[in-house]
Length: 309
Image (cartoon, rainbow, N blue to C red; front, side):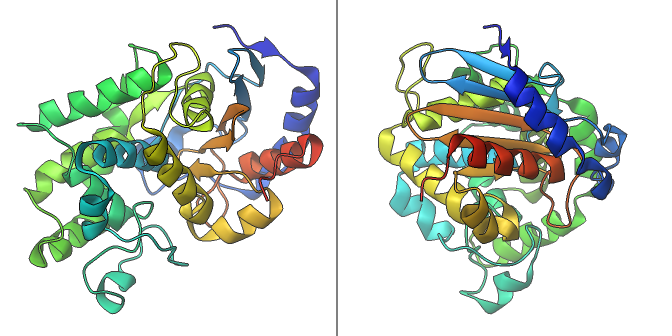
């Protein structure tokens, strides 16, 4: 699939790029600090298998928290919603993605939702497999089917960098293990989680995955029902309520599309039944969202009337 360059989209990218100077790359993960804060690209993958792009969409980046949507879809398919939501809640937090405070103060030890780190760690601990390699291979195979790209893998440098610096995530794992919310060996969960976050792709891959969700789990290229409709619906709902960290409410009002961001600067967006959006812009705002990426989505929402509300 070759994405067709679009001049109107390019003009929106140029306008949104003016915001990059107000953000900064995620330097608390050393490997992510190497990104160029001036980068901004977007791919739009339509349900009829056409694609528009602007910026350098071939540039790869790691999924980071965007992977939380994909791991959630996988475990919901394997266990069903009743079991999964016995371990993790379904409510927005209003706190930063790595906050530990609600684990103690609200329904002790059960994370409020699967889009914050505590909840995502629980979800990752549920991924099936006899060994760490089995579980990673199983997750990668699922994501390759979503993107219809067998070459997708993880960035070892980013995974190692995150593994060495993820002390708060480890603390949350041990806390939840004490209350039997998280099962399994903590270091094994951390190893899988950091590799999950380090899964790497480009904006076109991400837009195509977004398009699968736009079609309620059906792949636009292969026609395969990769995700059951109800699982896709649950994931999209979490993207609306919790997908943009603790800026999700404001994002829903301003832009109004299901979206999930990651601290690498990636954003996956969805226009239901129409197209998926893949954005990469590594300069982040104070909430951890791509500052130019959010601006670009705001401009796109205004121009193309994307809001679902």
